[in-house]
Image 1 (cartoon, rainbow, N blue to C red):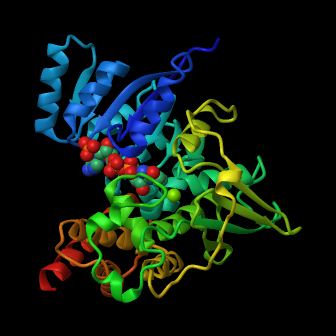
Image 2 (image 1 turned 90 degrees about the horizontal axis):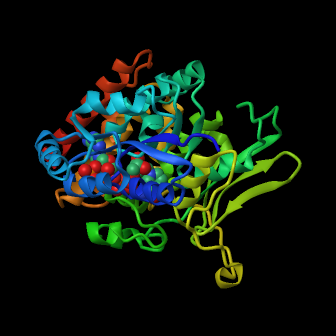
Length: 394
Ligand code: NDP
Ligand code: MG
């Protein structure tokens, strides 16, 4: 029996983090938890520490870190509590770590995920914003360090499974003609443009098929999530924008497909449960139980496919535009989107203001070439400022 793999879970208290711990708990002989991290939910992180006994627990928020530290001491746990961004990078890159689940939400996930890549760790990538913001830099680091990169986003995990095992990143040479990226269409798939003006954060967060964090839930409702995923697919599989086609598939049973030049289309199917791609990423190339119910095709009975509506969901178009513009454009778009989603959740802007705000930021700010990480971080700061100014004016 091999010694257990040592795992760091970045964003342990989130939707993906909790699903990851659920899978890890099913296989204590294969995995041990090295570190768990969160932003401010110290109570939940404490409960996870009691259960998984990590060597380290990291809180981004200092006050929450102090509270966690007190609880951990009082409970007599051996877990060492650290605070701040450097500590996130430290537990992502530590020598003892074999694999890192990158499940922090948003731009905050970039630095620790990059740290894991520089250290050559196996990366289970849920944080799609890393690739949207800094796709070229991140993929270069992954190639240089030899980090095995496993996509956790269900669509990209499906594509990874449907591509040839030794896919070289050259679609033509591998006989791949298209990536068919499926989308549920979100909670407003059939909502008219007039009604979209009125929708609330509660309605936007009530996804028909998936239970997720609030940010990605709003992204699914605007279809910006699919836009981010188009950019994610571009970097992961070296696919040009024209070769990535979004297919709305309301049942979310086919998680995506790969079309080949001989007419074959390979799909990966399953119940919409993130534990499947998480277990795949953890055990690859083996397969382990994920606790997911077997797919009942008779119960599903039918699978539907429709073309996306770019008019009601302009975020999708904006993402293609940013991808084609290249350079810092996707980072600008990502930052504007994060500000817009937060403002929408706080009821400061309307649902349809989200694409308006992003388009404004893309129009206003210049796109520059990305040479170093600083280029990306500075685009992120500028876009946030421009977005906040737009909100203040509106
Ligand atoms: P959640 O909002 O549920 O969880 C986010 C996690 O990140 C929490 O642990 C949170 O801590 C932590 N966090 C938040 N902000 C910061 C910060 N500034 N610094 C450090 N840590 C922070 O998100 P999800 O689990 O839904 O999503 C995580 C990532 O996975 C996203 O990038 C998303 O796009 C991607 N993803 C998610 C899917 C899903 O089904 N949920 C599917 C595919 C991809 P705290 O709890 O303390 O706030
Ligand atoms: Mg997805």
